[in-house]
Image (cartoon, rainbow, N blue to C red; front, side, top):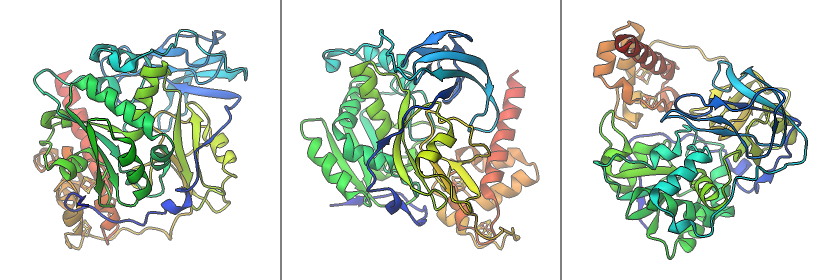
Length: 439
Ligand code: SF4
Ligand code: SF4
């Protein structure tokens, strides 16, 4: 079988063996949960509840009113303690609905399933996905209903289901493919109907052969195929995945829509199925808890709003030498500073490890390794220099906005230059200048 891939990229150690064989376990709901009103790309949801209100499991507690927004739902039944700023894994405090769990899991009665989800119209599918607050579960948390609404002048021919999970240590998507392949494929089929696409392609890296074989067996009868991809980071980044599978290049500043494609992660496909078929809002998700700083690495199904502390305790606690805590994967994850921070929809993993010897930064030796490995064909050393000297116009001309912050350049740099920091800083400064100009 042909194994497909994209140019450049890197091969970091995988460490997936720590959890790959661990079936997803359910974490009991915690006594108190915090539901941030912003846990997706776009605008925050507007609160629908206030202190003292009684809520039920799956009840909408925040309405995503803007186009780029998503509603949020309670992951327990109980009483609202406050609607106030709270820790957020993104770094800055965000308004959150804090709920005291009554332990009864009383279901919100209006979340009903449908008899034949495949007979729904594209609009009906999108509405049910929007009502359920589904967002991309690969980490970016882009509102899924928006992704399922391609502009009229951009016809979609292919739904790509992303089963790469190329970040080291993470294995929750792998487990989902082994444990719920039918739900993933039914969600993919609903995404195909919603976008009017002709076919589905599921892309899986060749370090997940068991999942590949199972999905290949289950996909019979659906307009789709499964493709094997080389294990390489960042194989799962949308542009790289599209190129590897279909040799189409998403233009600079463009979206997969521009080349007739919509990409959904395997967890998102499952969430689409549950939203449409069962009327189930996205109030829980599968995550990997791993790293040499976690006593018992596991894959778990966790309710949104659960404090990291409870997740880590369920996994045996932190090794006393652990000094780095990250939400997401080790390459693109966000460092955390508090165990009170709640799990959000974009939490693909919680990792803890011991830091290596102190990192000293040396001057650039112009070895060009960062250029040779950047999957987007950028020149990181030059971009970092432009940002350092505040020449943002030149940085933009050299394509800094196409940087996906994958971290390949920084990983490979022998001088340990924090290249991703410079990319982020440059992109943020350019975005802020643009906002000021348009105000
Ligand atoms: S972080 Fe940006 S510049 Fe560096 S390799 Fe990734 S895409 Fe290229
Ligand atoms: S990899 Fe590091 S040292 Fe080499 S050219 Fe890039 S920035 Fe300079």
